Image 1: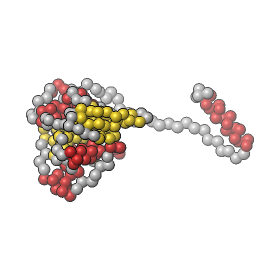
Image 2: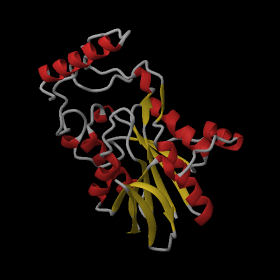
Image 3: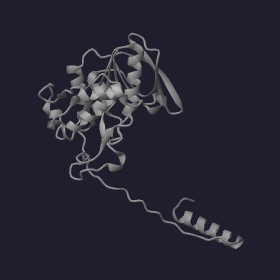
Length: 266
């Protein structure tokens, strides 16, 4: 099998900062990690490679420092990694990101059987890039996959989480799957993997290496806009009653009924 896993380097959840003017995330000077949900896609990709043979290539799109995420993926068990990095990609929304990833796969990694993604990224939390890539590549897609089994030459049967249970789907290859945490438990990097990751060459591809429509790139090529950013204010209105005897209980009950009536709850 020829497997591709799409990963993203994201800021640690506690360090997320936004640019108020552009509505994009500030990544400079912030500690970054592999998107935690992508680790499950990496793990199941490694398991499939070990069971069925073949190769596993990690692909990421981001600034040059995203190379670190690819090296971590190789340390875990991926065979190699490809980085998509160009100033023209800066500010891309999920649509523009999906377009670049799809074109890179189409032009540079042909003949694949399966593309794996985490269900969503913890920074944007949209879950749109995986299905977006599948759309650009005209692939069948199954989202929220919790189990992959009974892989044959031209298809795989999968369990897809839905409300109240799961669906069993037969997905023909080539296909794209987004996976949830239930699918695997990510392994730790090995010493051999770390050595390979430290010395490997990571190709960096941009507009010079991939034929792209520049009108579809970056902030200007993104059809969606963040029009406003604000921090929600949590306000709590309450009335406190200290109950010492039965009379206090009756007063508190009457006060509660009066309060609910004021709020038009009853």
